Image 1 (cartoon, rainbow, N blue to C red):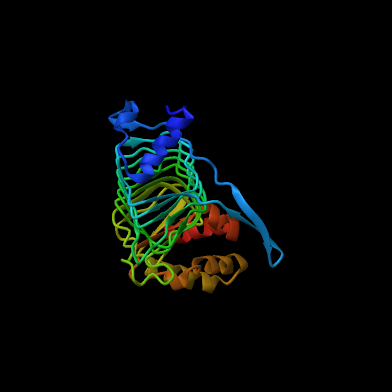
Image 2 (image 1 turned 120 degrees about the horizontal axis):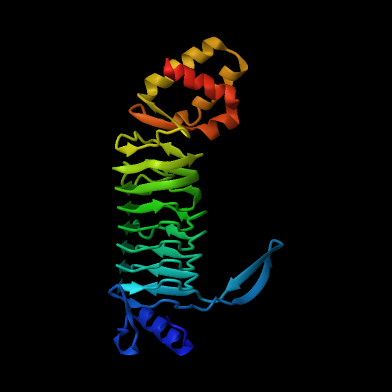
Length: 307
């Protein structure tokens, strides 16, 4: 673990400048260079001022890394807040339990890296520069904090989100392939195309597994979900042949025309404009449903589906 301040500064300086670390006498861990405990100084407030009666703090330069080629580094437990990556490639690197708040990334690729239990809340992981996205390939985000992270577009391939904190996220034009989600997702949006995302590849959600996930307020906009595994358990209602099934349900409920039926119709019409004609399946979270229609409405919908 890096504890010496001079060594800490020298390591970071060499990383930023792309210089070799061989002569620093650092150890290895599981075949990677051991950079555990690296600490970057917090940027200081340069000046404060008011703009339209709103207090603004101007910070000193944050930690920028451009054109880096990092491979086989283990940063476990490091304090790496406020880093900016530009046009870089990181392979076989471990960021487990790192403090990475306010991470911002442009035109960068992460290959086979670990972010287990990393703190990434509020980071910008899906920024775009000159039409180029960030790519996350073979990444383990297990138990990482990704709440409130921001995206315009990014590519996620072979990524694992196991018990990851995923809340208040709109993935916009991000694409997912061969990814696994387990545990809770709350107020998360997946889109075939995000806002003004016509220049990016459509998100087809290829071989994405949510079967062990708990989906609260999760939306799938413009997605057929043909190659997606959705949860089918006591916490969810899985609906197949979406268009035909919902049309039949809504037709029956309109005939019943009581308050519970009306609430169910309103619920089933949520995001109707985002539902493609070819959608093969969708899923309803029981907790979300009960908040709108009550337990009686849940029972009635189950009964109609059983018929």
